[in-house]
Image 1 (cartoon, rainbow, N blue to C red):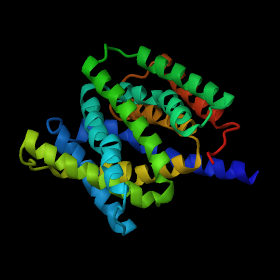
Image 2: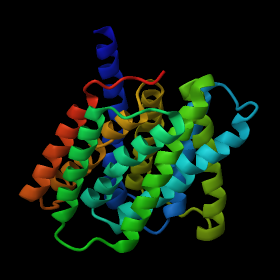
Image 3: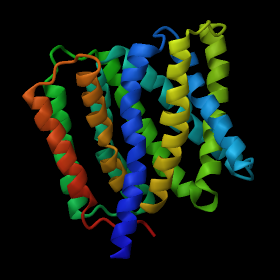
Image 4: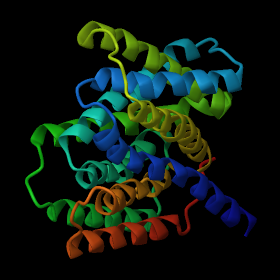
Amino acid sequence: MGHVKASWRWALVTAIAPITWGSTYFVTAHFLPANIPLWGSALRALPAGLVLLLLARRLPHGSWWWRSVVLGVLNFGGFFTLIYLSAILLPSSVAASIMALAPLVMGALGWLVLAERPTGWMAVGAALGILGVLAILGAGLSPANPWGVLTSLTALVMSSVGAVLNKKWGRDVPVLASTAWQATVGGLLLVVVAAVFEGPLPTLTGSELIGFAYISLVATALASVCWFAGLRRLAAGTVGIVGLLNPVTGVALGTLAAGEQLSWWQGLGMALVILGILAGRRESKPSS
């Protein structure tokens, strides 16, 4: 019984990440400049990494120097750039929904890389979640931008590989420290790339600064620590199912705050996603 309660507690902690990530599509599309995706990604990753580094008070050691570079690109640098572009190219609901395919990708990678065999309920949860995603995507009022779909799918694969590698490599260091290292490295790499391809950082308005503060400190620093902490204690496939809260948040904000129309098909899709999360949590076990 204690194990079940602890599992649910960590699932709730993990849920903070996809909920805040789902909100970044709306924040990016409505409050952040659309013409500086590289600088926008750098301003999201680097401040978060520096804040976490101050809290962790540790520097990488040994193999973590090169691991921080790999994970910094997968989980922050490259991933944030693709997500920023997706938020500009796609409606909030569509961009968030594509990322909900994570249960399949993370479950498969967890099985191949971490030997985490999916349970029957995890498979049921993933199937319900994917059906929900298909309902949400199929209800779009206009065709999705193919470049936006490509950037979202690439971001999905990149983040899933990064999450599984983070779990495989991160057992010997605190979550706060490993998250700080990769966010800082990813942010620094983005600053260099942004300066080369986009030139000097343009002047930002007050609302843009507030938007960047939110996606950096809340939707990156806090969310990443919660996500990676959940990965330490739950199976990768289970964490992927919890990540289905991402599209639910994206659809809800797109409907309530951005005036995007919610059809009954999308409502059905959201309901299936919630059922998928509940089903995926049954009989799930943390990894050893």
